[in-house]
Structures are given as structure tokens and as C-alpha cells.
Length: 444
Image (cartoon, rainbow, N blue to C red):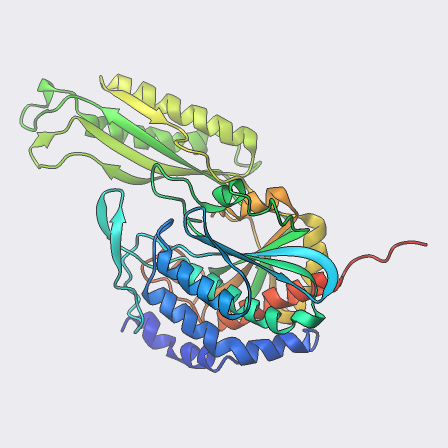
């Protein structure tokens, strides 16, 4: 087993007992009771999903597990939304507001090295290559938590005011090339058309937070995310005579180096942070052949629409002009598809629900999150209705969150106490909102 698995075995035992960690007097007793009753189920679901992960728009097993569970609860799930998405509506026994609760289901093309007894051995095809598949971002936890929340709320149906839409979403990490998917496609296919919620809630387990802590931020929280694709085109020649062609590898290397000045010299990062990162380089096949072309793909992260547009223009310009200096040409798609907008928490909703998170987390355990350069397509839901997206600590005691394997790492490790805390937080938010907690009294 890896060092993570050895060090953190105790967290498995604790999570398996489904003890409500950091349970506070202010949380609803039905929340603590549900967490105690359902905790072992949530852990079992999470471990099963972790062992059998699926890439975006391919979550057929996961979706079937979710839909079967919702049917067993007496709900009527809709399936096949945005390829593999699942939704269901719970109507409470009393009148009240409408809310949506969202969980994402997809995994990543990452080969797991955690050493867990239920580690993924799955493989799939991504961008034409055989890859390992892993829940390296914790979406298995999100799905399992929402399955538990659904079961808890169904048990309270008669006394529940209002209605709840459960949204189990595919492809949050992005659909495969040439496919549509994710939150944007869920909305395009009408997930909020027949059921327009008054608010939407979502959560994310996070490696930079210690287990037992919750994190939240009002307003802009996670960055806008855009992909780019740049193909540098040269002319193939033998490696022994580079003068016989145009070397796209050298040109591509120069494009990558010069592109670093877009942030460091062209963007006013005293206003808002900006990131331009290259994530993959593909070109050539043999040691002594200079190829025809090199493909570069990467991501752009911003918080300001003007800065976002400026980076698009600067990167396309750098690619074209630098390649031309080498005698090469480019096809620069910047961006190469619609990206995710900034994930912003509605300030009034955040202020209203913050006490609910404090009741569950306990004194000193609700963290004010800094701006996060990660991105989330929850942003699309939060543009339609007021949204609140919060974070659940995933890194166990004894590890420094600053150096722990991050989300998207092949060693990403979830302290399973996060399942208990996440379920209690989502239940407390849901019940407090539906029962009108924190709503200012109307003047008379």
C-alpha cells in the first residue's frame, strides 16, 4: 500500500462507522440521525464508484446505480439527459420553495497509484489513447453524498416543505472532443425548464482543506476555464538535415516559452489572477524524423471577462507570429470550444446559508476560501438561479493540505469523514432553506 493508504487507514475505520464528526448543538437533530443511519451506505457507494469509474458521457454504470437507487426510494428518475445524466423530483408533504441539489459523476483519465484496496484498475480511451481511469477529483464522493441526501429527504417527505430536484450530472470535467455534455447541456435539454428552482446547491471535496472543515466564499469563487488548441505546422525532414524542412518542434517550444509572457508581462495581475497552462504536447513518432506538425493543448483561467478576451487575442497572436518567425504556420483555436464561466456564489444566498454551514462544521471549522483557479461547470446553474457552491475538507489529520496530493493527482486520497460532513452540510442547507431559516422577517 502507498504511504497515504498506510497513514490514513484509521480514517477508513472512522468513516465506516459513520460517526458524525464535529457534530454541533446547532445542527438539526434529524441531520445527525440521518448521517448516523446512512453513513455506512454512503461509504459503500463511494468505494464501489471509486473502484469502477467512468469518463465523461460514459457514466452508464454510475447512472444506472443512481437511477436504481432513486426508484427504490419511490422517486421517478429521468435518465439519459445530456447522454447519461439522471434527475428526480421529491415533492414534500407541505408547500414551500423549490431547490436543486447537484452532484457530478465523471472520473478522469488518470492512472491511480493510491494503493487503496478499492483502487481503480479501469481503463478507457481518451483522445485516441488507452488511459487509466480514476476518480481523482472526488466526484464519486459527490454522487454518494447526494444519494444519501436523497434517501434522508425521502424519509422526511411528509413533513418536508417544498420540492427538491436531484441532479446527477455527467461530464463536469468536459465531454469528449466533438461531443456536448456537462451542466450546459443539461440545461439545454431542459433540466430547469419544467422545474425552475429558487436556489441551487453543490459541493466539492477538496485537498487543500483539512478533513473536518468546510469552505465557502461569497461572490466569484472559481475561475472561468477555457481550452485552447494550437497546431504548429512545419515540413517534415530527416533529423540529420533540419535545413531540409521546417521544424515545428522548435517553433512549438518557442511558442510555449513566449506564451509565458502573456501573464507575466501583458496582464495586470494586481487586478485579478490569470493562468495560462499547456497541458499536452503531441508531435513526432521517431527519434530521427522531424515531423510535419506539433499539437499543443492547454487551459486559460481568468476571473474578468475583459482579461479573458485579452488572453485569447494575445495567445493567438503569439502563436501566429512566433511560428512565422520559424517559417512555420499555425492553426490557433483560442478558445477551441465554449468554456466555463466564473463560478460565483450569490452573495445574499451565501450570507443567509453561512450559519447553516457553521452549525455543521462547528467553531473555527468554516473557512473563508480564497479565489480558486480551478473551475466548475456548476457556474452554468448559478447563472440561471442563485447558487451556493461550498467545499468539504478531504486531507486527513497528519498531512499538510499544502503538500497533500491534490485533486487530479493519481495519489489523490479522500479522508472518508468528508462523506459524513458533506452529507450533513447538504442536509442542513436543504432543510434550513426549505423551512425558511435565515429569511428576514417582512416589515409591518
